[in-house]
Image (tube, rainbow, N blue to C red):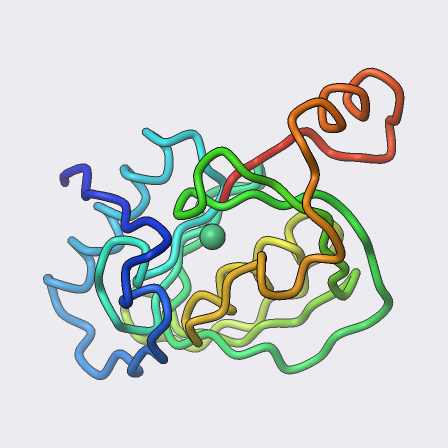
Length: 169
Ligand code: ZN
């Protein structure tokens, strides 16, 4: 296991459409472990392949409900809407308000290639949408309603309970 370098905005790798994973081998397991280590070290809640320079359809997510390793994930159903704050480990120092579905059902393969169906809601659903966008070269700043300044963010944290604390993905 190792900490990998996080690719930041301006690097073309963040703008590519990733290819599916075909081989479920030791290398894939090592990549997913490295991605989890890298995410935890950076105190993020999600990390996608392109963020460590790997253009494959892989992501790791941990929003406090345990570590999920998603290979070849596809959103198969969404319900409702939520608007909240997002940040991104590849877009340091910024945050924005983004509208996402409130409930997201995702199908993916685990690190052994076994199919999994997972129903997520609220912040977990937001993280799934954010990470899957990375696999298609999309960043949250492309779809945010507006950017949130440091000052506004601090005020929100003091005054408005409806916003979650900032968690980069
Ligand atoms: Zn991100």
